[in-house]
Amino acid sequence: MILRGAQPLDAAGIALIWNQIIRDTLATFTTVEKDRSTLAATIGAEPQRWIVAEEDGEVLGFACYFQFRGGPGYAQSMEYTIHLAQNARGRGLGGRLLAGLEAAARAEGAHSLYGGVSGANPEGQAFHLRRGFVRLAVLPEVGRKNAEWLDLHLYHKFL
Image (cartoon, rainbow, N blue to C red; front, side, top):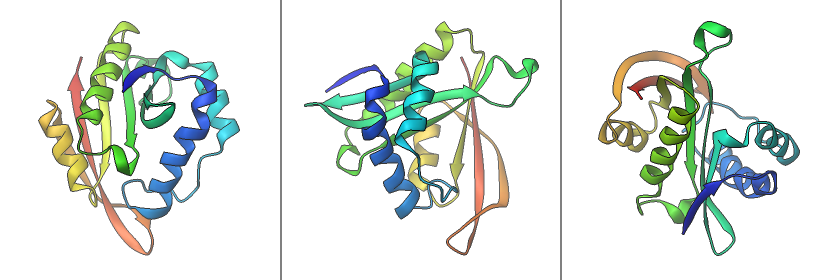
């Protein structure tokens, strides 16, 4: 398995992973599936902010980051996303993607990373704590999906 910078051609594999998570889990609050062409354009515009894990030509996971909030005052604070295909979990891949993402964000001049984790995703919460993130807050019932109110756990790490 290799980690590498994502390319627009990876959009189909990324969408496959992300859309399954959107459809079948409460790990993300959105119900709107990701469009391959939009993802390809986003990756093409900022390829340094996207990393994929690939094995035998298949995208097994991805990580990306983006500015935490709009405006120039937030230019060095980044929020990120990591998702893995079901068959790629439990192999240390998430940690490797996060390490690559941290290095890329640091190289771009980012000062800190933020992760928002669904209260329905205890594995994601434990992952952040194992990787040196600090839980800053729990926003109670801030999201709603599948007729359930969901908490959002906010995690932070200085780079």
